[in-house]
Length: 146
Image 1 (cartoon, rainbow, N blue to C red):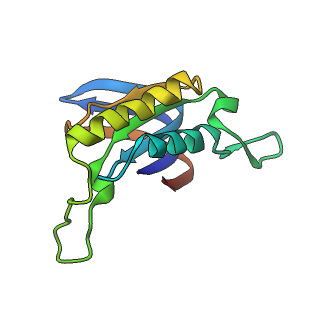
Image 2 (cartoon, rainbow, N blue to C red):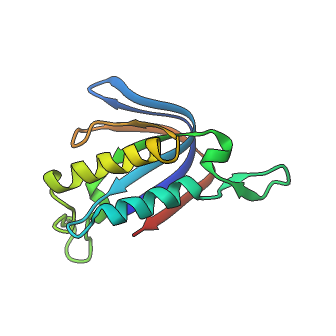
């Protein structure tokens, strides 16, 4: 499992010109799953996201988590995180989990962030063509891998 974490403000995702998810401040997550991922990978990544200290404290140090900041998450499924570009010019996506494997794990990941960590999570539409818009604050972008 791979999760790209971007500290963001004013984030939204549209499908067919309709906003389907939006947050004011927190994280934009790009979430990719592979064939071998399990609930243990989901739990590991959710814990990392929830406790990642990348928000500034009063001294300007990255010491606060999204929970400390009462931030929200815009979570976007993105199979292209498992695109292999080593050969040729067109990526191969054979490492990405098929939808019937990826979608339940992606939904469990988002639900875990909501239920266990109390974070508001907005999402796009799994498998849809989406347009994501946001301001990357910092910019701060990290990769979490299980």
